[in-house]
Image (cartoon, rainbow, N blue to C red; front, side, top):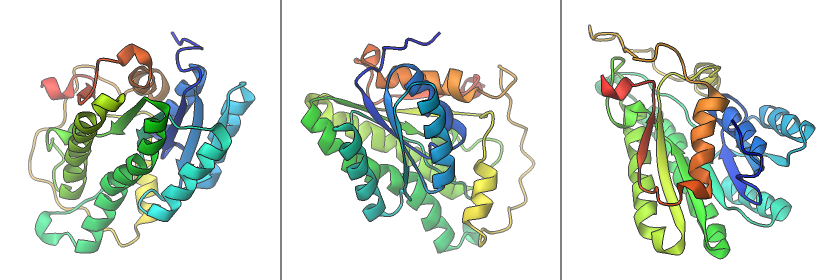
Length: 264
């Protein structure tokens, strides 16, 4: 059940908010009374989500932004503050996927994945934190993955695994550095995601992607809860909780939202 006032007065940047988990989280934040700035390199998708929020009485802004480009992040953050006056929350969710054995991975592919997944989260944190400091509080949530703790059954995607491990480390470091200033940072670790366009977007973004490597004969991934997680009502609900004051004593944590994957 949503609380339409839990995030009242809070302004959250959601990167990669035009589809998948980001879209679900943006919709949930708006349902709980928060204002949302949706950053996405696909402006049309971000606009669709902002329009859906507005149609239901919420406040949202769509901003075209490649999170791996600092000037674009700076401009998007400035546009958000111009519209809403402040920033109190960040969901660093924009991401891409990698593929290939380490010995076959080209440097440009490695740098692309880490640039979006990890450097993008760093840049958005860097430019949102000053506004949180000015506000006296803030909450940052990183979309990591079960790959932030384990390689899993898939394997052959070191750039993705390393980037997701790095996001958890970044959240912990922000938590330690800024806790006394009222800023919290946590990561969530999703497993399967319903209605995800990640695979489609990866192919659109990276025509140069290496051919997926042949997998080792590993067992298939197994989830005790045998389904994908719901974007808005499960992943989004967890994000909304972490952005809210109800989670005020939780920081530096990596929280599995994974159907029990990491328990197996």
